[in-house]
Length: 100
Image 1 (cartoon, rainbow, N blue to C red):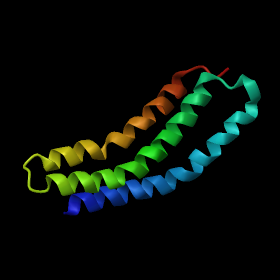
Image 2: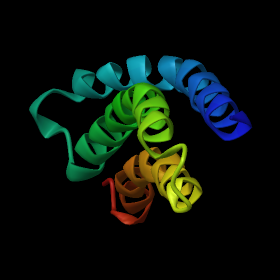
Image 3: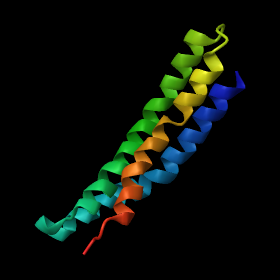
C-alpha cells in the first residue's frame, strides 16, 4: 500500500510546484499575434503537466484498488506513475525551436 501513497504525494507536490509556472504561461500571450510555436508548446506542455498530475492521483488509487491482488499490479502502478512526465516533452521540444 505504500506505492500509491508515495506516488500520490510526489505528484501532488509536483502539481503544487508547477502551478505558478503554469499560471505564468498566460503571459506568453502578451506577445500578441506574433506568438511562435515554442510559446504554444510551453503553454500546452505546462497545462498538460498540471492536468495529468492532478488526474493521475485518483487514477493511481483506482488502479491500485482494482489490481491489489494481481501480480502485475505493481507494474501497472509504475507505468501510471510516469505518464504525467510525458507532458514535459513539448517543453523540451520548445527549447530546441528557434524562438526568433
